[in-house]
Length: 117
Length: 110
Image (tube, rainbow over all chains, first blue to last red):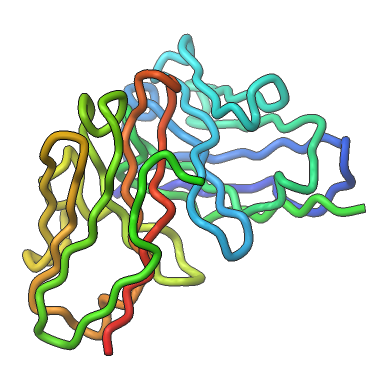
Protein backbone atom coordinates (compact mmCIF):
# COMPACT_ATOMS: atom_id res chain seq x y z
CA UNK A 1 0.00 0.00 0.00
CA UNK A 2 1.00 3.64 -0.35
CA UNK A 3 3.47 4.58 2.38
CA UNK A 4 5.02 8.01 2.89
CA UNK A 5 7.56 8.43 5.71
CA UNK A 6 8.58 11.96 6.60
CA UNK A 7 11.62 13.38 8.35
CA UNK A 8 13.44 16.66 8.85
CA UNK A 9 11.18 18.76 11.04
CA UNK A 10 12.16 20.52 14.22
CA UNK A 11 12.61 23.86 15.92
CA UNK A 12 14.34 26.70 14.11
CA UNK A 13 14.81 30.44 14.56
CA UNK A 14 13.13 32.99 12.28
CA UNK A 15 15.09 33.61 9.11
CA UNK A 16 16.76 30.22 9.15
CA UNK A 17 16.29 27.27 6.80
CA UNK A 18 15.06 23.70 7.08
CA UNK A 19 14.64 20.81 4.68
CA UNK A 20 11.87 18.24 4.90
CA UNK A 21 12.05 14.80 3.31
CA UNK A 22 9.39 12.25 2.41
CA UNK A 23 10.38 8.72 1.37
CA UNK A 24 7.76 6.81 -0.59
CA UNK A 25 7.06 3.13 -1.07
CA UNK A 26 4.24 0.90 -2.24
CA UNK A 27 3.73 2.59 -5.59
CA UNK A 28 5.70 3.61 -8.69
CA UNK A 29 7.01 6.92 -7.35
CA UNK A 30 8.11 8.39 -10.68
CA UNK A 31 4.55 8.16 -12.07
CA UNK A 32 2.82 10.38 -9.51
CA UNK A 33 2.63 14.06 -8.66
CA UNK A 34 3.18 14.98 -5.02
CA UNK A 35 2.14 17.79 -2.69
CA UNK A 36 3.12 19.38 0.58
CA UNK A 37 0.23 20.47 2.80
CA UNK A 38 0.57 22.13 6.19
CA UNK A 39 -1.61 22.75 9.22
CA UNK A 40 -0.84 25.43 11.77
CA UNK A 41 -1.72 24.59 15.38
CA UNK A 42 -5.50 24.64 15.80
CA UNK A 43 -6.04 25.72 12.20
CA UNK A 44 -7.20 24.15 8.95
CA UNK A 45 -5.32 22.53 6.11
CA UNK A 46 -3.27 24.79 3.85
CA UNK A 47 -1.77 23.69 0.56
CA UNK A 48 1.92 24.53 0.17
CA UNK A 49 3.30 23.14 -3.08
CA UNK A 50 2.88 20.61 -5.91
CA UNK A 51 5.47 18.92 -8.11
CA UNK A 52 4.71 16.94 -11.25
CA UNK A 53 5.76 13.33 -11.65
CA UNK A 54 8.85 14.22 -13.69
CA UNK A 55 9.74 17.18 -11.50
CA UNK A 56 9.49 19.64 -14.37
CA UNK A 57 6.42 21.52 -13.17
CA UNK A 58 6.19 23.10 -9.75
CA UNK A 59 3.44 25.17 -8.18
CA UNK A 60 3.44 27.11 -4.93
CA UNK A 61 1.01 28.94 -2.68
CA UNK A 62 1.45 32.68 -2.53
CA UNK A 63 2.54 32.45 1.11
CA UNK A 64 5.66 30.38 0.34
CA UNK A 65 6.54 31.24 -3.25
CA UNK A 66 10.10 32.51 -3.47
CA UNK A 67 11.04 31.04 -0.06
CA UNK A 68 10.22 27.34 -0.38
CA UNK A 69 11.37 24.92 -3.07
CA UNK A 70 9.76 21.58 -3.78
CA UNK A 71 11.88 18.92 -5.45
CA UNK A 72 12.08 15.19 -5.90
CA UNK A 73 14.58 12.41 -6.53
CA UNK A 74 12.86 9.76 -8.59
CA UNK A 75 15.86 7.48 -8.31
CA UNK A 76 15.48 7.32 -4.55
CA UNK A 77 11.70 7.72 -4.22
CA UNK A 78 12.11 10.87 -2.18
CA UNK A 79 10.27 14.18 -2.06
CA UNK A 80 11.81 17.29 -0.53
CA UNK A 81 10.73 20.69 0.70
CA UNK A 82 13.52 23.19 1.14
CA UNK A 83 12.28 26.02 3.36
CA UNK A 84 14.24 29.26 3.65
CA UNK A 85 13.64 32.61 5.38
CA UNK A 86 11.28 30.92 7.79
CA UNK A 87 8.83 33.08 9.73
CA UNK A 88 6.66 32.49 12.77
CA UNK A 89 3.71 31.96 10.40
CA UNK A 90 5.42 28.88 8.95
CA UNK A 91 4.99 27.02 12.24
CA UNK A 92 2.85 24.01 11.36
CA UNK A 93 2.60 20.29 10.91
CA UNK A 94 3.73 19.53 7.35
CA UNK A 95 2.36 16.59 5.39
CA UNK A 96 3.51 15.08 2.12
CA UNK A 97 0.75 13.56 0.06
CA UNK A 98 0.15 12.04 -3.35
CA UNK A 99 -2.25 13.45 -5.92
CA UNK A 100 -2.26 14.42 -9.60
CA UNK A 101 -4.08 17.71 -9.14
CA UNK A 102 -5.41 17.79 -5.59
CA UNK A 103 -4.01 15.86 -2.60
CA UNK A 104 -5.54 12.41 -2.62
CA UNK A 105 -4.28 8.94 -1.84
CA UNK A 106 -1.65 8.53 0.81
CA UNK A 107 -0.45 10.99 3.42
CA UNK A 108 2.76 11.04 5.39
CA UNK A 109 2.64 10.91 9.16
CA UNK A 110 3.40 14.61 9.39
CA UNK A 111 6.45 16.45 10.65
CA UNK A 112 6.28 19.43 12.97
CA UNK A 113 8.13 22.62 12.11
CA UNK A 114 8.34 25.18 14.90
CA UNK A 115 9.73 28.62 14.14
CA UNK A 116 10.53 30.47 17.31
CA UNK A 117 13.11 32.88 18.63
CA UNK B 1 -10.07 33.59 4.89
CA UNK B 2 -10.36 30.47 2.74
CA UNK B 3 -11.10 30.54 -0.98
CA UNK B 4 -13.61 27.71 -0.51
CA UNK B 5 -16.32 28.43 2.03
CA UNK B 6 -17.54 25.81 4.48
CA UNK B 7 -19.70 26.21 7.56
CA UNK B 8 -17.37 26.20 10.57
CA UNK B 9 -19.53 23.73 12.46
CA UNK B 10 -22.31 21.20 12.03
CA UNK B 11 -24.07 18.82 14.35
CA UNK B 12 -26.50 15.95 14.23
CA UNK B 13 -27.83 13.03 16.17
CA UNK B 14 -27.02 9.37 15.55
CA UNK B 15 -28.86 8.01 12.52
CA UNK B 16 -29.51 11.44 11.06
CA UNK B 17 -28.55 12.54 7.55
CA UNK B 18 -26.35 15.59 7.37
CA UNK B 19 -24.90 17.65 4.52
CA UNK B 20 -21.76 19.78 4.60
CA UNK B 21 -21.48 22.41 1.90
CA UNK B 22 -18.43 23.82 0.13
CA UNK B 23 -18.89 26.96 -1.92
CA UNK B 24 -16.39 28.24 -4.45
CA UNK B 25 -16.27 30.05 -7.76
CA UNK B 26 -15.92 29.49 -11.49
CA UNK B 27 -12.13 29.29 -11.22
CA UNK B 28 -12.14 26.37 -8.78
CA UNK B 29 -15.21 24.20 -8.16
CA UNK B 30 -16.93 25.58 -11.24
CA UNK B 31 -14.28 24.10 -13.51
CA UNK B 32 -12.49 21.45 -11.44
CA UNK B 33 -13.30 18.45 -9.31
CA UNK B 34 -13.50 18.44 -5.53
CA UNK B 35 -11.94 16.15 -2.94
CA UNK B 36 -13.20 15.74 0.60
CA UNK B 37 -11.10 14.77 3.63
CA UNK B 38 -11.87 13.67 7.17
CA UNK B 39 -9.52 14.52 10.00
CA UNK B 40 -9.99 13.32 13.54
CA UNK B 41 -8.08 15.84 15.70
CA UNK B 42 -4.51 14.74 16.28
CA UNK B 43 -4.48 12.37 13.31
CA UNK B 44 -3.51 12.51 9.65
CA UNK B 45 -6.18 13.66 7.16
CA UNK B 46 -7.92 10.86 5.32
CA UNK B 47 -9.32 11.05 1.81
CA UNK B 48 -13.08 10.41 1.73
CA UNK B 49 -14.28 11.53 -1.71
CA UNK B 50 -12.30 12.18 -4.90
CA UNK B 51 -13.30 13.58 -8.28
CA UNK B 52 -16.34 15.09 -6.56
CA UNK B 53 -18.40 11.93 -6.15
CA UNK B 54 -16.12 8.88 -5.95
CA UNK B 55 -15.70 7.22 -2.57
CA UNK B 56 -12.16 6.34 -1.62
CA UNK B 57 -11.36 2.72 -0.87
CA UNK B 58 -12.60 1.63 2.54
CA UNK B 59 -14.91 4.60 3.03
CA UNK B 60 -18.39 3.52 4.15
CA UNK B 61 -21.25 3.94 1.72
CA UNK B 62 -22.83 6.38 4.19
CA UNK B 63 -20.54 9.04 2.75
CA UNK B 64 -21.33 10.55 -0.64
CA UNK B 65 -20.21 13.59 -2.58
CA UNK B 66 -21.78 15.75 -5.23
CA UNK B 67 -21.05 18.91 -7.18
CA UNK B 68 -23.28 21.42 -8.91
CA UNK B 69 -22.09 24.64 -10.45
CA UNK B 70 -19.70 26.36 -8.05
CA UNK B 71 -20.71 24.34 -5.00
CA UNK B 72 -20.01 20.87 -3.69
CA UNK B 73 -21.56 18.85 -0.90
CA UNK B 74 -20.61 15.99 1.36
CA UNK B 75 -23.53 13.97 2.65
CA UNK B 76 -23.33 11.63 5.60
CA UNK B 77 -26.30 9.36 6.16
CA UNK B 78 -26.89 7.27 9.24
CA UNK B 79 -24.64 9.51 11.32
CA UNK B 80 -22.46 7.64 13.81
CA UNK B 81 -20.44 8.81 16.80
CA UNK B 82 -17.20 7.90 15.05
CA UNK B 83 -18.02 10.45 12.35
CA UNK B 84 -17.09 13.23 14.78
CA UNK B 85 -14.19 14.93 13.02
CA UNK B 86 -13.17 17.91 10.94
CA UNK B 87 -14.12 17.79 7.26
CA UNK B 88 -12.34 19.70 4.49
CA UNK B 89 -13.03 20.23 0.80
CA UNK B 90 -10.32 21.05 -1.75
CA UNK B 91 -10.12 21.88 -5.44
CA UNK B 92 -7.69 23.24 -8.00
CA UNK B 93 -7.99 26.94 -8.73
CA UNK B 94 -7.20 27.99 -12.29
CA UNK B 95 -6.71 31.65 -11.39
CA UNK B 96 -4.40 31.01 -8.44
CA UNK B 97 -2.72 28.09 -10.22
CA UNK B 98 -2.79 26.08 -7.04
CA UNK B 99 -4.87 23.99 -4.67
CA UNK B 100 -7.41 25.70 -2.44
CA UNK B 101 -8.92 24.22 0.71
CA UNK B 102 -12.09 25.06 2.56
CA UNK B 103 -11.71 26.30 6.11
CA UNK B 104 -13.04 23.05 7.49
CA UNK B 105 -16.26 21.99 9.21
CA UNK B 106 -16.20 20.58 12.73
CA UNK B 107 -18.86 17.89 12.98
CA UNK B 108 -20.31 17.06 16.37
CA UNK B 109 -22.50 14.02 16.89
CA UNK B 110 -24.85 14.82 19.76
